[in-house]
Length: 233
Image 1: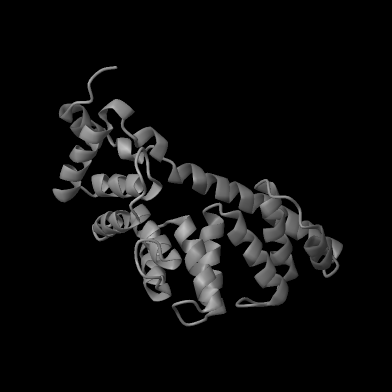
Image 2: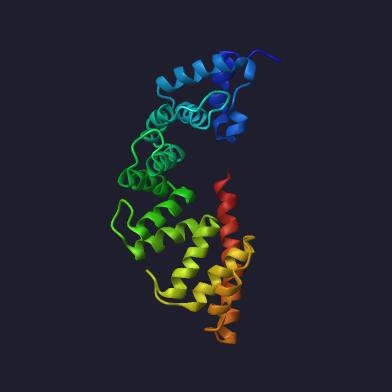
């Protein structure tokens, strides 16, 4: 195997290797110690991508024991430079209390940073916290707004929660057509049908409304798929 040199490492930063899945970013075992020292140097020099990758390796324990406190330190450093994935993980760190004291207010703040930067998972987690009143004021309407953003980013749990909110009139205007539209959208996305929920909503729809919901679900699915393709570019 070719030696993993510093020039190789620097080139990886330049070409954006850090956008690849974490498994593809872990250095070979025979060069791991040396590579980790370079990641640390780059992180200490202020490279946000290196800070995030270092945090991921410390968090997951790639080729070494996990270091939750060290991971939190570097997630924070990267997040403060605008790295949205690092901000999302800071939300996770505070929500779960891993490497830091558990703090729902801090978790919500970090999720919000990532959510505003377009992170679907952060939008969903923030919506959950707002709906439950964890670390923030309980606000069903605001929760629905964040669920909508996450739903349009392709997160099936957000789509399902929106369906339930429209079915109950929780945070949104009671609307069985919208409820069925979102429920059918989850099915287009590959989720297993929720027969009892679907039956209850369907009972409130006229044939015309059912057809409207079906057409809207097909359109919404295409819209979401287009969003997902754009986000991968």
